Length: 61
Image 1: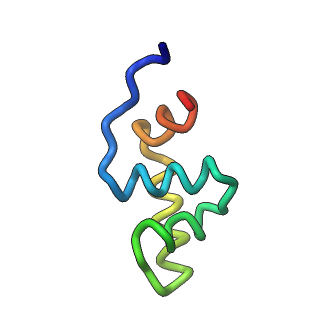
Image 2: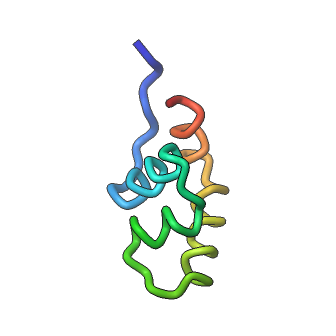
């Protein structure tokens, strides 16, 4: 069995799953966080991708 997955919020998990599906960080943030402004989504994506828990989640799967 895989190592225990890090605990993420539902939106963080939706974002990470979007990345795993091949979406860009910006598009994954638009979908997960329901933001309209792509610059805002880009900032959210950069912040999320810098979080150790999300990085660990992405590497585990």
